[in-house]
Amino acid sequence: MSIQIPRGTQDILPGEVEKWQYVEEVAKTLCHNYQYKEIRTPIFEASELFTRGVGDTTDIVQKEMYMFEDRGGRSLALRPEGTASVVRSFVGNKMYGHPNQPTKLFYSGPMFRYERPQAGRYRQFVQFGVEALGSEDPAIDAEVISLAMGIYKKLGLTQLKLVINSLGDAGSRNAHREALINHFKPRIDEFCGDCQNRLEKNPLRILDCKKDRDHELMSTAPSILDYLNDESKQYFEKVQTHLSDMDVEFKVDPTLVRGLDYYNHTAFEIMSDAEGFGAITTLCGGGRYNGLVEMIGGPETPGIGFAFSIERLLSALEAEGVELPIEQGVECFIVSLGDDAKDHAVKLLHNLRAAGISSEKDYLDRKVKGQFKAADRYEAKYVAVIGDNELQENKINLKDMATGEQEEVSLDQFVDNVKSKLGK
Image 1: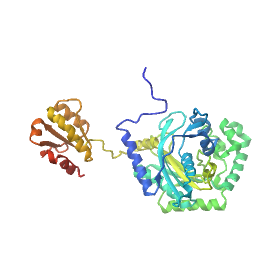
Image 2: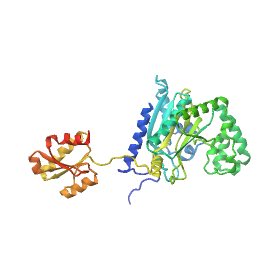
Image 3: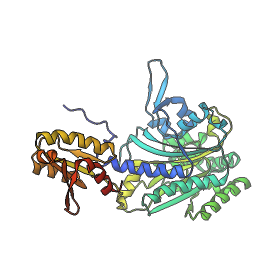
């Protein structure tokens, strides 16, 4: 019996992986334009990093983390998200002491969550994220949000909805917390076990419950916006002003609650409005986390960031019918006739590749007709044909597959000729 791929994972095959590469390259290029630098962190971390950083009341920590003990008895976890790892690195490597502040970072890599696989959601998924650490300027909140929107728009998505909210500072959240407890407590037995556990620990998370989202108390719950103090209100108003100045369209949604415990002040989500995208429309989420660095053992440092799943982004592109400009064809395919020409084709192929030209030849000893069919399958722009006679005359025939035009070229000038035709 053959070994099957683990449930909730997928193989990204040639022909599909190029889409991933293109999307990641567009995102990385835009991040560089905003002066964000790439960081790479381990796939597994100490479990405590996530229980402390993500929050022990979250679904991620309670239900979805892949945890194990190594041979030394240390509790480790496959990373379920990227922010905590980046902050751990920021603290451990004392990046807060670098003269260039704020520290602006981006990352991309596989994350792991044990959840029910469904359309666009996997147990191993690739997350792209951005973190800006060291500034509490509302302008950088707007910058981070505009960067996220910019990535989606650069890739061709148009049916997007940006919603923002403020979770306020500690004082605002404490006042709202008490109001939520008083609102839900009399009828908390009508809610799921998770919500009952969250009532005293973090009642804000009740608003994020998927099981009880239609309960009548959800729609009448106290709004955080009614409990913001003057400082939090002014901060949120400035974020909105900056977004408007950037021509970034948004809506304020007072019910927006991020699923991780470390958020405060600005929170946002980008959703797809495309028909047929599915029930779960959120593409990207993020917000401000001013206390996270301290939770992980660092100095008091404000931060803000976002993350999105590459899988869901590709699903959104498909739902909108966006065709990515991916070239998969070979630039030059060599067809050889005769033993000497076949051997010389190896050298020609090497020279083409050394000159930066995507090239291929036949390795299955096909006849000429079969080699031309292979060139068609490779979508070759040019086909170079060399036989034993041409080899003796130091010549090679070059065919433009788009126009059908052919010309005889000196072998000495062959590579330069192909480069010139390709504009390289």
